[in-house]
Length: 108
Image (cartoon, rainbow, N blue to C red):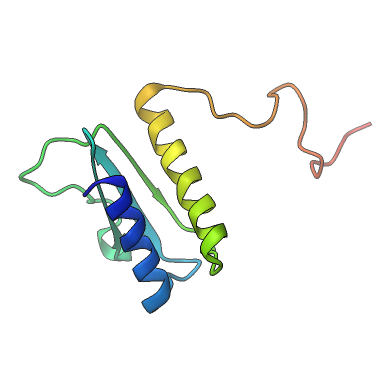
């Protein structure tokens, strides 16, 4: 499925039965085609179909899915950007490595 179809299927899922925070979602790209599915915990280690070659990029994630349509689109766009960075090796680091996170306990 293409990107617009992928987003439409995400929207339909959220409207019908939003995944829970602990559900694992598998997302992949093969060329300009995308696929995704909720992975049962028993099958989490085996996400590729045996008759397919390895995807160009893939990720598994769990998250709190936004219910607001605008936030869902932003969430989706960020997921795709992260997935694409895996195929293009783009750096999506949002925080300088040499700086600690603000909530990280500082040792003085």
